Length: 451
Ligand code: HEM
Image (cartoon, rainbow, N blue to C red):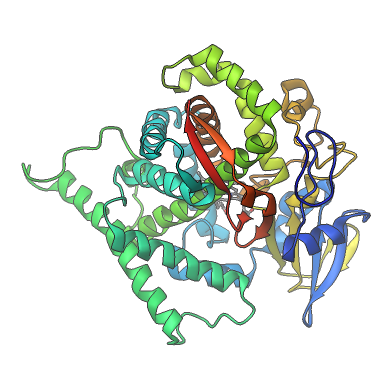
C-alpha cells in the first residue's frame, strides 16, 4: 500500500508530513551528530538524539540534571509529590517501595482485567461503526487503568470522567503553553482546573478511605466487597518501607494519581498508533492475523498465550519506535556540566529526543519504514544500548514498562483477532503532534468491522 500522506516511499514506507515541535526537533536532528544547541527565547537548550549522549545524560551524569521546573510546576497540582515530580531522597525511597509491584513477576495477574475491558469495548462497537481510534483507545485505557488501580469504572459517571479529562487538559496546557499562569493565579481556567483536580482527588481518596475502613472497622454487610483481584491500590496500601512503615495517605494519593497520569494516555497513544500503522500496512496486519488465528482461533487471549504471539509484540514495539508516546524526555541542568562534549550552563534545558533517536539510519536502516522484523529476537538483541528508549533509561526509567508492554501485547493480539479496522479517508491527513505525549492529530477516523 502506498503512502497517501507526504512523500511517497516503498510498500511499507511512509514519511509523514510532520508539523510543529516534533518536526522542528527532527529537522534539527537530521544530519547532526545527535547533539544540537538552540535557544528557547533567551534560555539555552540542547536536543539529544544520539544513543551514547542520551545514556550519558540519563545515567552517567544523571546527578547533574533535574526534571525541569516547567514540567514539575505543571504536574504538581494534580500529582503532588508522586514519582513524576519528586527528586532526591524522597524519589529513591518511593521508587524502592513502588517498583516491586510492577515487576515482571507481579504483572501477569492484571492480564485478565485488561482482556475483559478490551472485550467490552469491542462488544460496544456496532458493525460498521465510524469511530476515532484515539478517542476509543483513550476510553479503553481509562477503563483499564481504573480497573487495575482500584477495581472501579468511570463509564457511568460523566461528571467525573469530564473532570478527569479536563484536569489532564490543564496539565497539558501548563506544559505546552508559553504563557500558562501558575495555578495560584485565579484565572477562570485555573479556577476550573482546581475544581476538577479536587473532584478527581476526592474520588480516589474515597477508595483509600473505604479500604482503610474495611481493614480496621467491624464487618459492614453493605460495604463493597473485596476486589475480584488484588488491585494496585491494595498493593500500594500494603507496601512497607524498610522501617516497616506504610505510605502516608497524602503520598499514597499522589502516587496513585501519578500512576494514572503516567499510564493512561501513553498507552492510549501507543495503541492508536499501532492500529493506525496496521491499517496502513495490510501485509503486516495479515501476518498479525495469521499469528493470532493460529494460536488463539476464536478463544480469548490470556497471559500464557503471549509467549506464542511474538509477532504481535514486535508490531507494538515497532509502532513505539516510529511514534514513541514519550517522544521527548526533558531534563534541566542543575549545575554546569557537559552534554555530548559541549559545556552547558546550569539551567540549560536538555531534551532527549526519542522520536529522532529512533530514526537514526545507522541503527534503523530506512528508518521511516514500518518493519516489525527489526524487533525479531536476534535483531533486537543486536541494537546498541540506548538506541531504543520508549520508556527512558536510568534512575527514572518507567516503572510501568512491563505492564505497558503486556497491555500493548494483549491489546494488539485481541484487537487484530476481533476486528478489522478500515481507515477512513481523513486518516491520510494524520500528523504526529507533540503535546505532553506524541498523539496522532487530529485523530484516526476508522470504520470497525467485526471479524
Ligand atoms: C506505553 C506506555 C508508557 C510509556 C511509553 C511510558 C514512558 C515513560 C517514560 C519515557 C518515562 C521516563 C520519564 C523520565 O525519564 O523523565 C516514564 C516514567 C514513568 N512512568 Fe511510564 N510509560 C508508559 C506506561 C506507564 C505505566 C503503565 C505506568 C504505571 C502504571 C507508568 C508509570 C510511570 C511513572 C510512575 C514514571 C515516573 C518514574 C520516575 O521518574 O521515577 N508508565 N514512563
